Image (cartoon, rainbow, N blue to C red):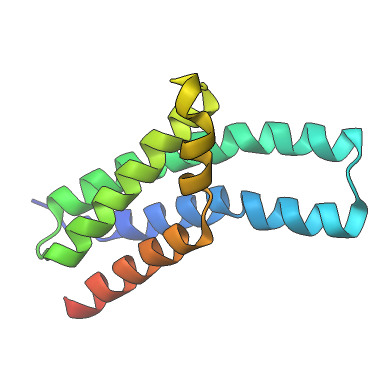
Length: 127
């Protein structure tokens, strides 16, 4: 099997571009205020956020499957990635609607993002 280490780099780039959505939205709101143009831009960016995260999830799946080495921490980071992606998709489609507020609360927590990043860094440091 050929080495597919580049898939990790591709996944990282996809996740970075996709997840710049929220910080960019906060910065734009503070610097420029809330205008129709800004709201329209971020509505379009939300679609890219979802698409690139789902694409990153698939690339991460292949990266993890074909990796020569793996450990429990990386497997936990993959589970967090899957969870964040699935809940994000459910939020976008508002399904099930009665849990939308709870899903949004947990999905958008900075702590969850930090846990995800720490698991990725620790897992790759062990290898």
